[in-house]
Length: 446
Picture 1 (cartoon, rainbow, N blue to C red):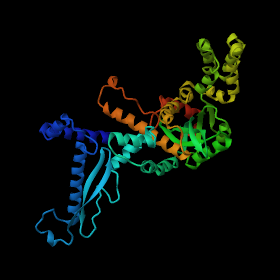
Picture 2 (tube, rainbow, N blue to C red):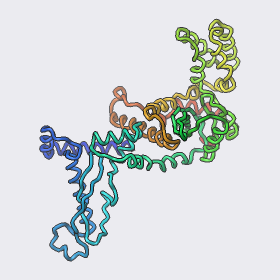
Picture 3 (cartoon, helix red, strand yellow):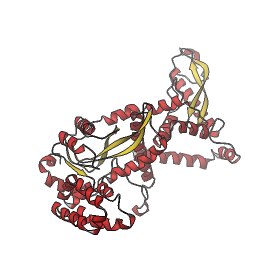
Picture 4 (cartoon, rainbow, N blue to C red):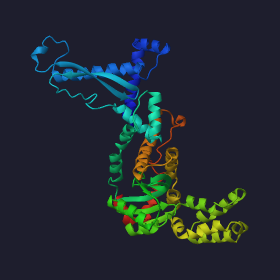
């Protein structure tokens, strides 16, 4: 897809260069230099769009009737031209006034600008892109009116964005692989209207790593309060979509999640994200002691065995730092059962499940999109925006990479995939360890 888009862009650039070299654009350049605008109702692009669309509509009518305009043998054909009617269409460069040709029998159905169509597809794509970038419907209204001179109602823009709802539903219900060796889970907080009140709700996002080490966003779930019942429903949904087994589920200590996972996938290991645990344990540590406490905690989460980690935590508890910050020790001890599975894995696998960083990076980008929204009218609006934002972020990064294709690696600055389609670092070595630890569950999928 990225390669096809780049080839299309290269052809467009080549055509523009040929037109400029031939002098065909000299008059347009002169009028621009004289101060004429490009967009808006009186812009040069508006006139060019009008000419191109009307030319295409007339060509469609010619194909429908079977003869060219002005053909002396037109009377021999059963149907004929019958003037035109005025129509205004909204486009990404402003409103365009068209003269749409008609036929006498009324059988002509244009495809370039369809009957009843009031917006070109490019404008719909622009609206969805602006919405995915975090703009509210009111913001989009103002943006279109001030930049391209197109005024659309709140209802029209809302209808355009709602057209993606079916696609979001299909995505949320799509079939999944039978085995995901690792699933990460994390959440962001959004404000959603609930009757007369606006409440904080958690939008939980699950990212699965498939057998090739490729990450996929498996779904999004909106919930006001966490608990075993909610997580049991999430796990059951994933199971119904085809996920028969999960080896390791990495989360941030979500309430009730271990029980829900065990009910659906009894053999799965639920692992607390070590980075989340470290952050929680350092919450009440003063800035001047943070480096010292962090250095001691390394002996806990980098220990070779659970016994060695216990000894390191006991040493911290008996030290001056432990007496000064008992909450740090308590945080680790409270989460000990969900932390120690991590210590049973070899280094290659620890690096994979050490943190939910990849999904946290995604959530960081999503927070930038949602922070200006105030609140959402319902859960469906949250789902729609987050899905669009994920697609928009990955598409933007793909375009940046396409621009740098062919450059030496040292000169490339474009970011890689954020989550969807990203390949887990050193996955082959981690998979080899998984095949030794879970041979009866993973080897059949190799």
